[in-house]
Image (cartoon, rainbow, N blue to C red; front, side, top):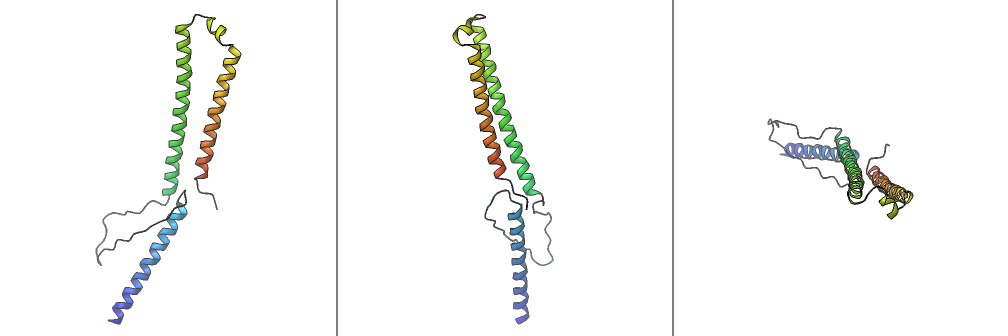
Amino acid sequence: MATAARTQQAHEKQVQKIVEEAADQIAADSPIEEEVVVSVEELPPGQRRATRTSLPKDGAEAVTNTVMQSAAKSVEVGQQLAADSFNAWIDFTKSVFQPGEVSRLMHPKAAVESSFRFAEELLAVQKEFTLRMMDALPVPK
């Protein structure tokens, strides 16, 4: 009976070591600081699992790439929205005003200044967003 208890203790110690190593590896690969919980499913002796359920070693890299692709797509959509808005405004003014009439309402130089001010603000927001995304990436050791 003492041998069975020792074997059980050795098994539990080995399982605990595996759990700790897995948690450390997952935490090391994570792009953000988080609490890692590892659960262990044991099968009866001699029975094997049909498929492997572990994450690939480059799981954190895949998540990071997905986040970066999503961020890039969001910026692209924002830029397209701004361009569409400018084009809609130009189409509107062409349909409502006669040539030269718009310049009497707004000086062309003021329109250029206003447009570039908007573009600068949009670029500043995009820069801030990108820097915040970079803060979420793991720092090389």
